[in-house]
Amino acid sequence: MPWFQSVCSGASSVTAYLLYTITVVTLGPLQFGYHMAELNAPQDVITCEKEVIQARGKAVRLPQCISMTPALFGLVSSIFTLGGLVGALVAGPCSTRYGRVPTMRIMTVFFILGPIFEAAASNISLFSIGRVLSGLGAGAAVVVVPVYISEVSPSGQKGVFGALTQVTINVGILATQALGLFLSRGQKWRIILAVAGAIGVVQLVGLSGVSESPQWLYNQGKPQSAKKVLKRIRSDKDDVEGEIGGWKSDAFGNESGHEEEALLHREGDAAGRDNSNRTDRPENNSGVGVFEILRHPLHRPAVIAVVGVMIAQQFCGVNSIIMYSVSILGKIFPTQSALLTVIISAINLVVTVAGAPLADRIGRKTCLLVSIAAMGTNAALLAISIHFSIRILSAVATLLFVTSYAIGLGPVPFLLPSELVSQDAVGAAQSLALAASWIATFLVAQFFPILDTYLDRGRVFYVFAALAAFFFAFVAWRVPESKDKRDADEVWGRQRRVE
Image (cartoon, rainbow, N blue to C red; front, side):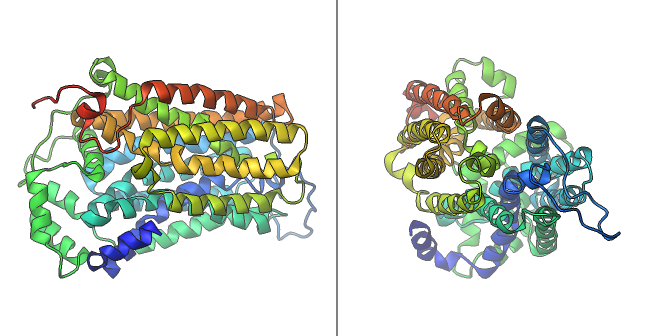
């Protein structure tokens, strides 16, 4: 396994405390995946589609189900993404101004409160409030956690540990699907939702032993505190002074984590500029804003490419499977759809881990084109198989649809902002990509159940096949290859600018 070999090759830099720290913080992305898929398996039970046996006695005070139309269920599912958008946009400035760990502590509070509302909901309103609160935590997690991991990881293992964000998202999806296989009956669906709150409590307790990012401390003018934390994270053989010296020579560097820090730094400066007493910190105030990047002809092609690929990630339809696969497959696998969903989630996790090095081997653009073409083909096959009730084809097409996403359209879009966009505009491009991703996720989550009901018999997947064809042409035309390119100037074949 490439990951195992990479970690072993740098084992001297990987301490037990570092592993503890990364394990605790990655519970955040795990929660993101968990909440994305938590309503999938128990959908019919929650919405009263399945017949329930009313419990007798006074012990049960909550209804066994909450009656919803497909449109209302789509709203309850998708409203999570609106909370995620707000959480993601707020988390950047907060983590820059107040620190990564305090922001993650606030994040876990939402991870606790959200499931309480969801598990105890007696009506759609309370259920929706819980979904929004959970979304706020999830949005913050996918912004702050990757930055923190990049800042505490040894230079030789940044890619390995950085990939854990996507891996733990898939672990969360698998966990909730597995629970749904056993608990989608009676009142037990509430346990699925409550488990997320328990994970939030574990993370909140675990964060008490997690140190603040040493790089954030350094950027706040606290070099001695940063050095103390870095010595705790690193082994005795590591050159702590040399690592800190690298921060001095290049505040934001060329590592992806530093580029993410640049994004949060610029957003934090917009929120408040009252930290003029910082010392030993290089300033970088030349960043390009969101509106400027849209108008500037130098940046516009890169922004179109980055945002377009991020929209493609959602509009090719993967979340229709992650969020609604049990109801989709239930049309032709009435008793086995939940089990098939668990198997698909498990294979998706394996493919995500195994396929992590693929973009570095065959190129970003090639990965995207192969992934989109395969998703479009399997979307069409899935539509045909559901329409004609071809059971084996439905199972195979669903599996290949999800694994096709995992090898390209899943991981690659997150690499592109830092590779296609000039350094001074990376922050603004990432902000636009982030907003595009959450909005596209909302649209798929909200309207898929409605379209599926209206078109009937799997025809909605023809829509995803058509969208995949469109985005294949888009990537082929508008997205350049960035593998092994030094910077955005080389990617776009223009003369390197002298700052």
